[in-house]
Length: 358
Image (cartoon, rainbow, N blue to C red; front, side, top):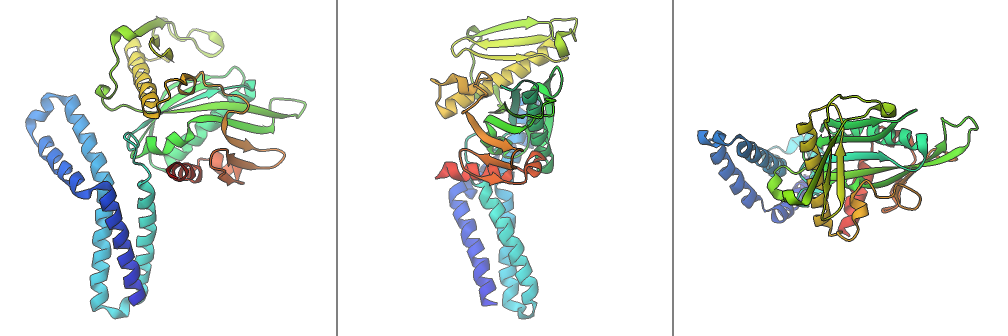
């Protein structure tokens, strides 16, 4: 029983360390303040402000509630150990479960960036490799959507441009949930695929590339201020597969941020107003990412213009002559390629996060 008590106390010690890092008392005070504000009827005089505060409250509670619940459970077990010495096996199982939960919560401490806890906007673009690259882009799209589903994240398709023969040219979608951006930012970069091409009758091995851009979704426009004079907005008619028209009105929108040269274009079958709003959200994400990473001198890495070709990849997916997925930054690898392409990418995500802290 003494060993179990020591293990339980070690869990409490780790929770105390997390408390010091996150400042539970400060977060709890902010939760109480927001709860009081939200309970006031007049808050709904400004629905947008009310929704922002509700999202903030939910995010803060998700940060500390699991830690407080775990602490209460461990303290209860320690009390029971003092009066029920004949339940050692049951206590051991409980401590095992608590240690698993602790490791999960400790991983969450890696998400300490300003916007890590928020939603993400993901843009997949096919690169060098023709039809194979477009097929690979669709494979990546499926991988991230499967990953989101496995992690109970909500997704919403914003735009999708289908390739001429197979796959996709581009896909833009939102991923919503706690730490969505913090996790997916590890995927930002060029991905490389090596395989026997299913589109080549000669059965030759082909290399293709696709770009994954991951941007923070800005909950409030005030986080990134954009002057109207710095924008050029062009509207045009949407085009579909093969260039055919899909819309009889000028609903497609292209926004150019003149000071940086960043261009965002959205063309789907929504209204011009919706497309402009979506394009502005993506532009804010790009500008914020540029600010956070302080890479104003390297704008190519923030735009779809980032070269999706040889030598710039962050990860290799090899299907032939052997099977291996390997991250070039962390050296983390998985031999089960199908598992990875089915959305099992947490190993790559956490290897990147832990490596970035070193």
